[in-house]
Length: 219
Image (cartoon, rainbow, N blue to C red; front, side, top):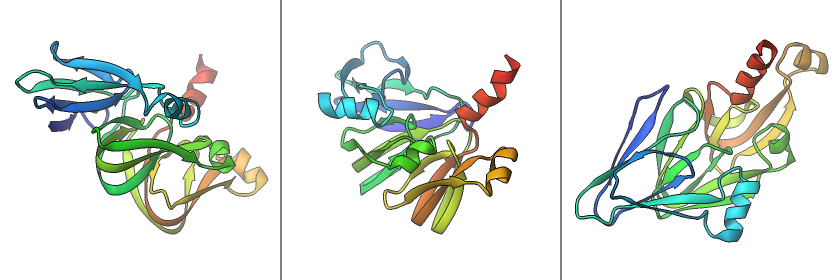
């Protein structure tokens, strides 16, 4: 399997060249183009009950699409995310990574997707009541609206709500006011997410909720 991320950082998309017999698993509606003789099969996301959990608890689709090359030569499928922004690939080697709802795009077949309790604070911070966790061995592609920034946290770090994209599973999330009551809301910041622990996080430079808040008064 040969892959490349092109069009970035604003209009990133993924070219996946599948060798004979290879499969890529993608979020529903991620396919932009594909070779006419590739086989596409919609399956429950990890099975019926796990699929329901990922849809209603983890913010992902009930179904995922399996693109398989059953021909005798390489074939290409191009995958995209629903918003303009950066896409990244991460290689898992028995470890795991947590994603905000909607960040997952596609993965190789050996990657497992599951949902875990994220806490009430995560829900209040608009990161979802449950977190989507990718684990196993293989490659995961994920993305978000805007550019993606890495941050190594050792202790505590503050991220505005709806800007957290991915984080290592040992990190803990807490929601709090940005400052005092008056300064938090009069200053426009409101609630923020306090991240505690030691590990890596990924944040996005833009948020859909921020765009919606900017557009609503002008429509």
